[in-house]
Length: 280
Image (tube, rainbow, N blue to C red):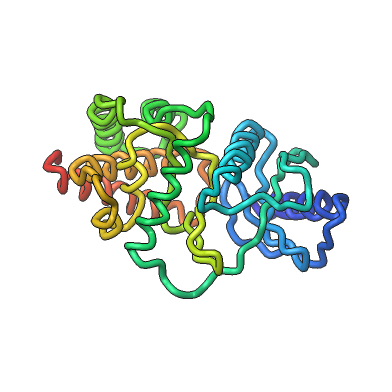
């Protein structure tokens, strides 16, 4: 968010939490993109704030969290002191979560894989109306194929992303019999190391697909500890993930920090992943 919008988002979170009886003396910005994550102190709440246009996504995330809490999933929980819902204020939607103090040590690949397996097992226990990963690919493809949405994307890079998204989406969706509910974006930034153990955050991207789609977001060593994973499929999913990531970065209104760097890096990662699959 731009500075003026961020200030409004911070105030919206502060005012919402205060009205709910939570003490807020200070607000720390943890992450700032198209939506922001804020630590409210001393009540120790993690507030996720997004423009009101993200109401459906925020409501979906809260519902997913509510259901996963009932099956003991390894995930961050909504704050138990307030109603588990999305709050609206000043053109923003706000959800309030438990804040977990991070533990400094790096999560070992075996522990990462174990958390994956427990999370996937929990996801199989809930019934949630989530899109298939191919629906998410289709959204990324619209950004790539519409020059008005991605005006700075060169013709050659547009072709690369379009062909990658189209071809790999079709190839990966062939065996849908083994598809299940997934986290959607379980990269290291969405796995917290806490005193309770590793916990996933950010459920707004939950979708259906093969477990390899989730595993492709993690460091390569993690998959070696996940029994039964198809490593060739993981490589294809990794190329698809980077193609989607790149598509979002080339959107005209993308607000990711260091966007220019990630535009170049994303395309380089796509090419490297395709080469790894023998699909260059």
